[in-house]
Length: 101
Image 1: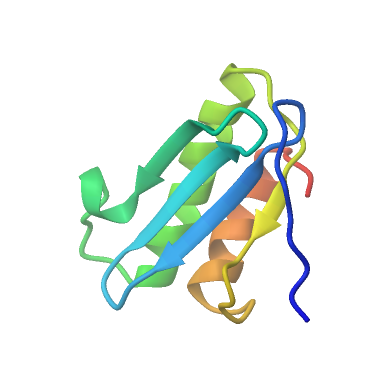
Image 2: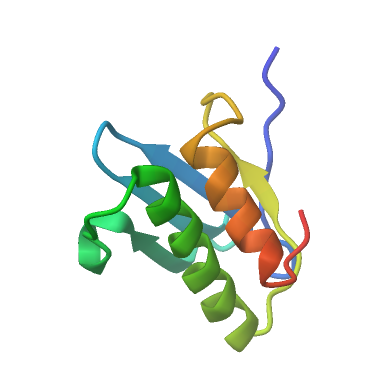
């Protein structure tokens, strides 16, 4: 059975969606039904580098944005994806900025 994670304003949920080409990330407060931050590799990070490195850079950028608004702890919701490849690279990028989940 899948465990349901609920994010709050103090400890929001990071939701990850991965397509064949891009990766999308949202920081969500489920109690107030509000998206605090969102970013994707499609927006502006269309580099000519491997997709795992793009995911890692996206994690670093999103982590810095989260620290600016004062959020340091998260629930990490991988939406049924395996924890390897781009999802793991994104998580490692977030951890490098000092975030905990």
